[in-house]
Amino acid sequence: MHVVLYLAVLPILGSCSGVQSALDPAGEEARQVATLFWVMTVGSGAIWGIVVALALYASRRKRRPVSEETAGKLIFWAGVVFPVTVLTALLAFALWLMPTLRPFAFGDFARLRVEVVGNQFWWRVVYHLPDGKRVVSANEVRLPVGERVEFSLTSADMIHSFWIPALGGKMDLIPGRVNRLSLLATEAGIYRGQCAEFCGVAHALMAFPVFVMEPTDFNEWLNARTTPSAGVEADARGRDLFLGRDCGTCHRIDGTQAQGSSGPDLSHIGSRLTLGAGQVKNDPDALGRFIAHSSAIKPGSMMPAYLDLPEDDIAAMAFWLKGLQ
Ligand code: CUA
Image 1 (cartoon, rainbow, N blue to C red):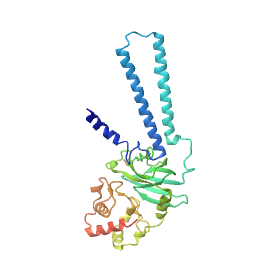
Image 2: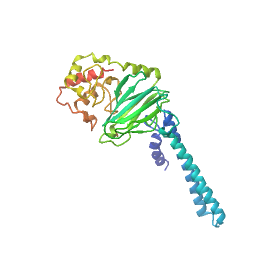
Image 3: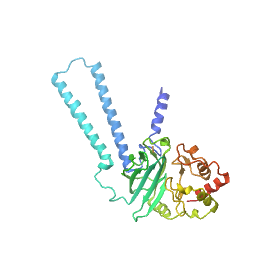
Image 4: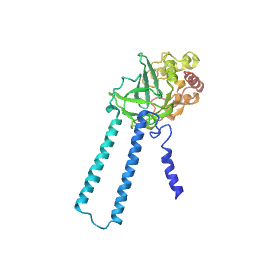
């Protein structure tokens, strides 16, 4: 019996931690959501226990009927005052957790604004620096620890939902509308975000790593991305193949003629952790496989297959892309 109980509880407890758990908070908003969860879980558990105990007591022990006055008092206090108080307090707490109802204005103190655009099935991520510069990236979010960051969220096609459980509550990305979300990460580390609104065949494959970095590391990382990668000039063969196959019609690479915007921006792609929005580890082998047949790694990918390309051409392109650090 104990073993069965243990096996049943283990996966439940296991889901309380990890890179994508709202119950293992690493940010201010996530901590509040987790607090609300525990308050509601413990509170409703206690209320349930009391109600069950009273029901058992009434059915097994108490045989004598109560007076009408006592029954009226019981209904008033336990049936009206108690639930109204508890539910009002919970409602107030939950409303306060809703970002748009918070008693502060966005943008006043957020030094950094990150624009996220949902696409089938990837994320465009644009960092808007205070000096007006823009850094375009994709399928990865980096944030400084201890600094409030404002996200402006929209979509190019379907309704998606931006969710980094370890940092805070989710927010929809809606075509034609900009939603705002403010997050404050409190612990450095690598977390995982996930699209949380069904948006098509690869909805479940629409994830992204989140790096919460020390502010100096973050600024260094961001500054390095305001100029083209040094790798752009290296290995001319891989670059010429990439540009020659018109990859630049859909993809942009800073410092080249590739200026497409219908696919993920590939400037500095070599330094990203994953490919295909969180699907596989980013290395030259995976890059080559993605170029040759992207939908084998990511079903639903809009990128055509290039199975006709010679293997060493693919390897040269993959090698060049991986060098875009
Ligand atoms: Cu995008 Cu689900």
